[in-house]
Image (cartoon, rainbow, N blue to C red; front, side, top):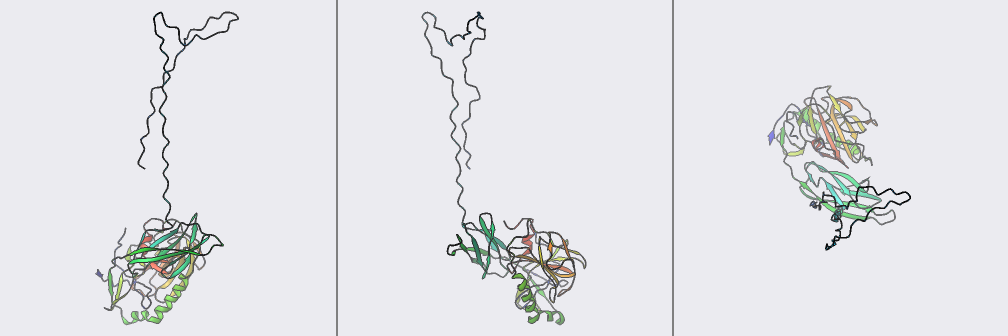
Length: 363
């Protein structure tokens, strides 16, 4: 699909190129049951006794008559039948739960630009996951360990290895378990962008690479605790004007990179909100992305907010979901006001729209 939306340029973070926030695009939202033997409802027969009171002879002990009398002459004595008893009910069968797989992915596969929770269900004193060339500690959740992994839009489809190193006890030798997760191909549109010489100069390799290095230094931080809970919320009230994964061709050149965030259209001064609870780890003016904020949500998950006009938080500050953190602007490499918003998982920009479905991500 080819589109051209010249009024808002996106922002990307390639090794040698940074994309422009695009505008004008729409939002592509949104045991068998055992039959029990019934107990008879008619109560069993109970032999009755005479209701007439015995004679009250002074000094006599009152006695009850015999339950049965001798038969009349020529009669046959018929033994009294015992009362029927309800049938014995067999105990219900107890289902044996299936054992947990040592490694579970949720969701079980990764679409390009997607993320997944890796669960490790073996007893261990510690665990470390290795994925995409990066190692980082897993976090404890009850009897299991977990970690977030993510892939970019240009990740190669197919099976990707995931390994977990762990110790069963503090004194035990390190063991390792290996699995694979499927990366599924997605189709992304391509946007052709024409830049004037002055704007194109901001994509010079030295400018781009310096900004990439500064961002990666922030993304390398790891908080061994999950700070968010519940679903992420929209960081701005406006509609989506540019989607994650759009390929970018500049001045009729080849597609060398893609849009690494989600753009929300708006005006200068519109409110920008924290998408989830976390700690502000960057408040700075960047050359390409303009005034920027990065929030660490723990467990390797961060969000970034770019092209701002005003800051309403400072580095080190803790924020809550939906808290006002900034005002929308038009700073950096843009041609109109908007918010460029990113979700980063262990240094990889992933599709933020997958975090705005109203479902909670994580254990």
